[in-house]
Amino acid sequence: MKVKKTNNAFKNCISLKNIILNDSLISIGNHVFENCNSLEEIIIPKNVNEIGYYAFETNSMKIYVYFNENEIPEGWSTNWYKGDLEIHYGYEDSILVEEEKR
Image (cartoon, rainbow, N blue to C red; front, side):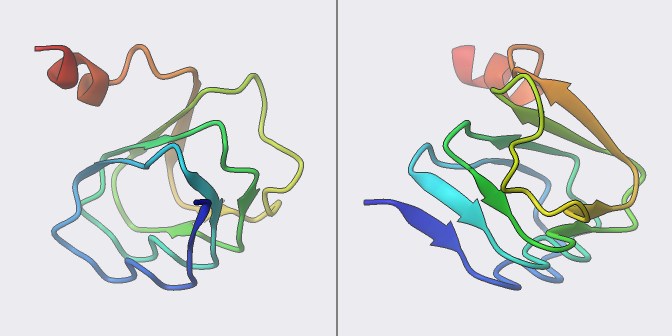
């Protein structure tokens, strides 16, 4: 089953800190992680071929975004984030992956 995160799904979720999205996820809607100001790190699977308008709009200091692609997929909104995101292509360096290995 292919899963989509609907618009505003985690909006204002202040307790969300680190998240690994499931491989069955194919789409992230508009403003899904808006104002998740505790969010530090997220791993986006390579199956996500669409991210909506300001899916990541936050006042966080920095969010590390990891995804297993060589470039931003074409289906992602040109305004998929607003804030200070650090994008990593591949997620081997993620602290979440390191914690899972333990």
